[in-house]
Amino acid sequence: MALDKNLACYRLFQLFSPSLPIGGFTYSQGLEYAVEAGWVRNRQEFESWLMNVVMSSIAILELPILEKFYYATSCAVTDEAIASIDHWSELLYASRESKELRAEEVQRGKALNTLLRQLNMDMTVVDKMTQSPNQLIGMCIAAHHWQINLEQLTEGYLWSWLENMVTAGVKLVPLGQTDGQRVLLSVTECFPDAIARAKRTEEWMISSFTPSLALASSLHETQYTRLFRS
Image 1 (tube, rainbow, N blue to C red):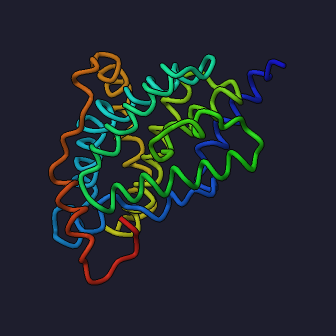
Image 2 (spheres, one colour):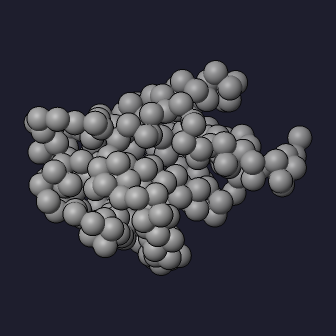
């Protein structure tokens, strides 16, 4: 049965809500160390940090892989589709350059997988994978179940990532609530460019290049005081 268009929109909000129980709010993706080390000291530096991650990681790694997963889960579960999903899942995990970033990918993937099973979604794709489930494949399964199109899914993913990071930044930098809203306004302006870049990214180009984030995440593992898991 076709889902009402407006209802699909509400399901999109639900999928990317901070209240979704997959622990997104517990990760800072290296930001906590970057603040501790003095790399990020104010709103302008925070915006620069986030925009670099968007254009040098999300646009050329997560979004192209999200598209691969979306189309691979849009039809019958074939051996070819599973092989493709495993291939891009392996690349996704390999592109997480620290122990904490890989652990985050695994933990959020498992949490979303558990939630979707409890919501009675068809998880045949995950059952056939040889790689650990990740949150991108779970989001695609939920998107098809709730009839969310790829454009909506992409926009929702970007917004969800940014909202979690701004929540972390408000606590860590620290920023006032108004400055947090200014960051949201500023960084979302680069989202159309990020989506356009993702569409131009060919298979051989899918990768990530955020050395500062990788260093921050690695050093966060031994940071003396920590609020976040990454």
